[in-house]
Length: 61
Image 1: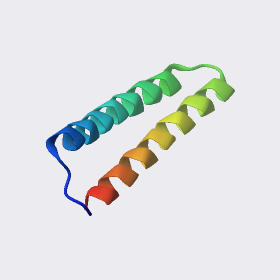
Image 2: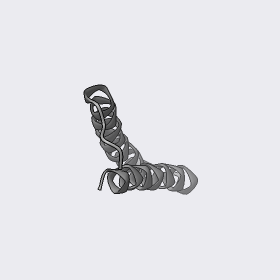
Image 3: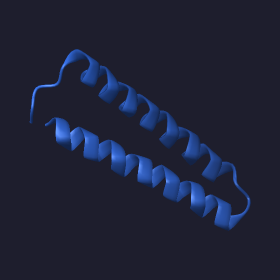
Image 4: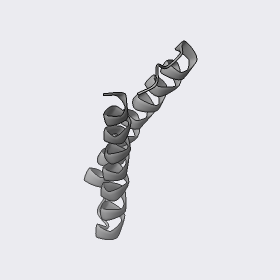
């Protein structure tokens, strides 16, 4: 992995923070949804955010 400068590191940190926030938000929407298709939509969105987060973390290793 190439060394990241301070600005790039800040951007990665923000991506991870926003991703974590989106995971929580979409999971909560799914839990509170009565409609099964809406629930599934938000579960998939949360899962997608989690995959993106894991991809970023793997890149940093």
